[in-house]
Structures are given as structure tokens and as C-alpha cells.
Image (cartoon, rainbow, N blue to C red; front, side):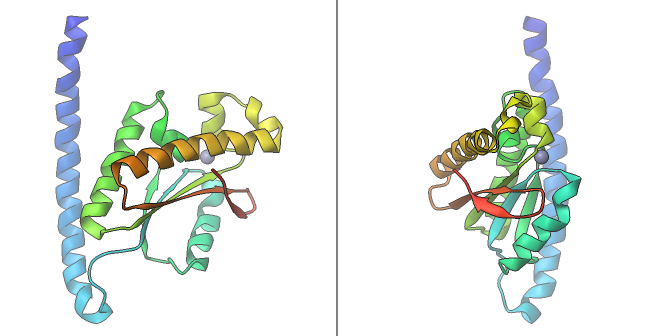
Length: 181
Ligand SMILES: [Zn+2]
């Protein structure tokens, strides 16, 4: 027990070091990019939003199309976690939770985002893996299940960052999006 306890912080330190190294590299690159672009673009550093979506390969172009349709092409940061809202809050994969919050923090610091868009989708494999497939048998139950997790994450973001707007969305496999939660 105590061995495990001693071991954990060391692992976290190592991960943290790696993460900070990545952040340092990423920050450097984006700083250079910002410097290069500001005179032409006329828009200072920031961007509109951070999108959290699932990793599902079937929906990548639908997501991009949806964001472009809202005029957000090339104007949003994108964090991908299997299960989207569920990935950010599930007890089953705590490292994913941490990854989400760290990326949100970086997006705020680097790009001064003012909105988080959380995009769940129907027939989500990660939801099935984490919660079981039962909820997908009835479309209404499936929607409610997503609403619970979307709402929970929205509440957590509101609490930590009260100035951020949070949208909670559910996409069908043919790319239609509705507000849920
Ligand atoms: Zn999914």
C-alpha cells in the first residue's frame, strides 16, 4: 500500500515533466506563428472556442463541416477524447479528465477562448465501453444519457471558469447536431 503510494507521485512527476516539455514546445511554436500572422491577419492572438469531441473516425469531416458552417473554420482549438463529455469526467480514465482540464487551461492562456463547445455523438463506442450498450437501444434514453454527462461537464466548467460560455451538443452519425443538456 505504502509502496504504491510512494510510486504514484513519481509517475505523475514524470508525466508532468513530459507534459510541461510538450507545452513549452507547443507554446513556442504557436508564439512564433502568432508573431508571423498578426500583421497580416489584423487579429490579435486569440481565437473563439475550444471544441471537445470524440475520436470517432466516422465523424471527423462532419465535425469540421459543422464548425465551418458556424463560421469557425480555423478558429477553434480541438481536444479529442473518446466519449467527449464522458471522457472528460469518467472515473474509469482519470488521466483523460486531467488531460481535458489541462488543455482547457492552456487554451485559455494561449488563445483567450471565450467558449467551450462540447460535442457528443450518437452510437458512441466509448459510451458503450464505459457505460454498457443498454442506453443506445432507445434513442430517447441514449439522448438523456448524453444529456446527463454533457450537463455535468458544463456545470464543472461553469464552476471553474464562470466567464466561459459552454454549449452542449449531440451529433447523429449523418452529421446533424442538436443542443442537448
Ligand atoms: Zn464516440
